[in-house]
Length: 88
Image (cartoon, rainbow, N blue to C red; front, side, top):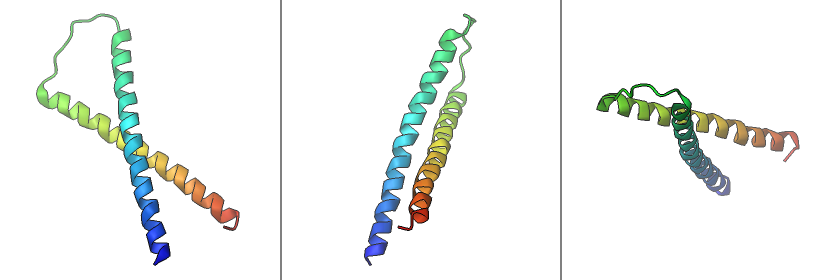
């Protein structure tokens, strides 16, 4: 019973880490997009339609979630294997 409870806490922890990383990465991606747009030479601004803007936004969040999931897997998986190799 205690092992199942500890495993549940680890799952919640990894989900919170992924959620936090997703938000941080999405903010970083948005900042990067704005910075790259500001550094480009001035060109006539083309307005995107509503659906195109929402698709772009969804793409940013999916990219952030994917990177957060990979980072969490690598970090927590690496920590797990370090513990296994140390015999604990």
